[in-house]
Image (cartoon, rainbow over the protein chains, first blue to last red):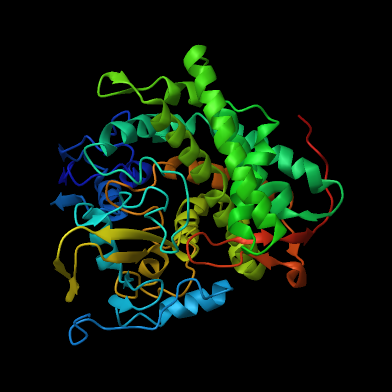
Length: 63
Length: 407
């Protein structure tokens, strides 16, 4: 599984990080800097929840 | 003249409702009309569907929050005379470096460092009433705690705190024809005076506090303009002292009226995370924001013209059944919950991370130490209108007394 974060669309709500801190990484202003990432095995559910939590709908999941 | 054939017109006056129930009912009445025109307040668009509100918030170039009249706030529909609200009333490129200052100071990581202070002030607030078995939760706890966290972090002396917090709270909580409101307006001018003094003092002699970080910030490689720093401090105070209070007042009353939700939070504290989002969805402290259309555009099937005023509704977006199943019901573990209580797009609330922490510590301390509180319903006082900030001005309470924890 891979996550794609549209970092241009991210406005720093940090909800993804709040529910999936092991998948999504923030810069020191609280904006997502993950861009594209292979999800480590076992964290798929967290990654999905993080995407669903984003109010900007900036995260897509590629299975 | 409007093109009435294409734009639905509604009789919607956002300032007309004196109670939460009336305001909620009025928004519910617009559900079949996600974008509409109302003739009230000089005539403006009302955007209330979830997707339309989110899209308008994100499209800052078409729906600008920048000032068009130096004396009048652009983000209220009522034409409130307020100092420039920075960074919200700036658009890019001016917006970006100023927003950056605030984003760094209130990032999730920075906000987390203030959690112990939020816990401390919540404990002090509960200590104030716990021995007596009765109190007034807004004045004793809900209203002083967010103010103390914000103003202590900024670095204002404790003597300023009640003056500042009353200035913002009373302006929202009392009708415009009352002595309390007039006193709040006068206090607002005094707050501006104190902000000017303290910003100048930090430029002269920096300290380790939020005021210094703002007063001595760099914007595009040069020191921030003095009036920009003052405006940023004023907005930070306004954002910090009364919005979290409004949310907590709604949550406290909700848990009184819904004992099943209170019991679940007491039994399963992990529910606080989804419950916080659900309180934000159902009782957003900032219920609406206004914008100005910058170009002729068709939006939601409606012909908008440059200069038109628009009201975006965070609260109606949160009740849109297309976006939230069972939207009128409070579901304590709702997920996903992409409410727009903090807005969306570039101007989304930069204080959201601290707000969640202060709310959680305040509510946690209350429920842990006074789990059986009962609100004295006949003495409850609501804010006089629910147009922009909604909340409760007084929540008298009775409970089983308990021990003070002390400093």
